[in-house]
Image: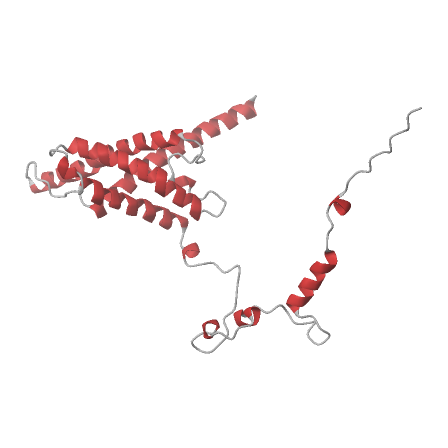
Length: 239
């Protein structure tokens, strides 16, 4: 006759982990320095008291002790997101203009279309490899930099590599023919001249025009997405 198997006791968190609750209490008491005389005192936040070293760096110029605040916001954290995002995009666009259009543009046999195409390709690569990862690094978990990215998808979406390249080729061409040529034509109309290049390509203005063109395209994309989502929501409610 076979013996009955003993029922297996359900494993609970109490017997699965050997929680050292008493050790945690001892650690908290040690950090607070809880004695009958100092039990009512709060945990010190002075650096010199925490480290146990009387280092001159732990004091301010006025002689006061420096306090340690783990929740203190750094300088960059106080700058609004839109300022940081636009500055990063503007700076990298200016760098691409300086190194590509000024650097290798002279080897394009004077053809502006070839220079614009190479600049757009390099701009797309820079955005995909440097700018977007930098935005992901600076964000605080709320994806607050998505409104400044044309394709705000995860890094594993490798198709964005090619779409960013094609997209920034379009941005560079639209920026050149829309802003540079348009601005020069406007100046020529005002002055009554013909085919005079009054505003040339240089990094600062190139970065400004590139950011404006980029944000116009991103704004149109966000508007379309918003309208599509709104339409789908209204359709779902009417069903």
